Image 1 (cartoon, rainbow over the protein chains, first blue to last red):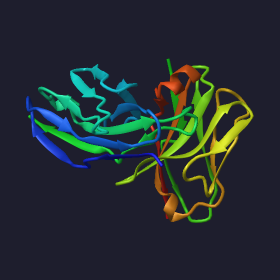
Image 2: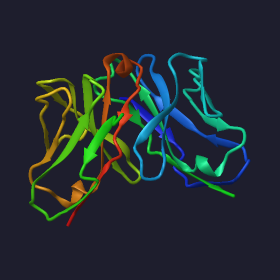
Image 3: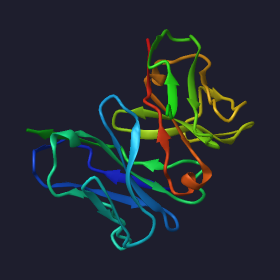
Length: 113
Length: 115
């Protein structure tokens, strides 16, 4: 079956540090890959996505590249801010999608000023 | 623009009690779903619906019922609450085009504690 593995954290960084959150996946076929973000007290919201190999998704300074050869979709940001403190979920979509996204366990990111 | 609205936001139940978590969306989305979020487990799909009158089971459906009588509403019923159902519940919706691209719109969550 499908699965997503990501570092759980918490990951604590200082403001302006470089961020990498690792995500690897197992899936049949050719899945689409996503990063969702959950700010404190809120629901999840889509951060970025990539639908095929070598695609790069980007949004709000975050980037992730779909690497089929390493089955990875690592999230990066060059300079984090306190406002980036949140839980980040890697997810995949395989097939028609009606039976939902497969989510990783989430990575809690804490940015200190 | 309300989006996906869940009520209540917080609820405490005793073991064996029943309750309904409400979910409504005003985006005319065909697809609606319920997830539960547990520490160290990520999000797991409970039930989903691809349109009014159609529902199906997700990964963890036991102990929950759903119905979809209208496009807007997708309530989740706990028939006899158990402590294992203590969790944060999220409702999410999408239009079919968005579903195929994985773009789900989430409510703010309902935190349920079963004593």
